[in-house]
Image (cartoon, rainbow, N blue to C red; front, top):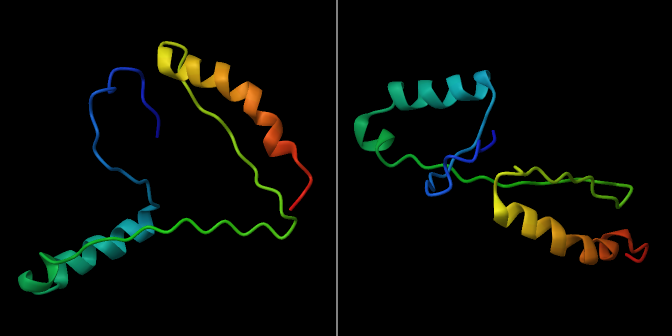
Length: 87
């Protein structure tokens, strides 16, 4: 999911899930009693297991966003901290 530069003022929490998980959630809401379904909420936890103690990361940005370009400019000087071999 990415922003094409036109949604800077929109702040709607969103998360992409696969079709099967979406069907499980949808079926729960459809088949649960209304008093249960209306109380449904989701909790998301991002667990990243890396036995080699390395984290893989990417930066995604759009060149039409000045804040993204500023972030990259200032991040470059701090990026060397990520290359530190100490654990």
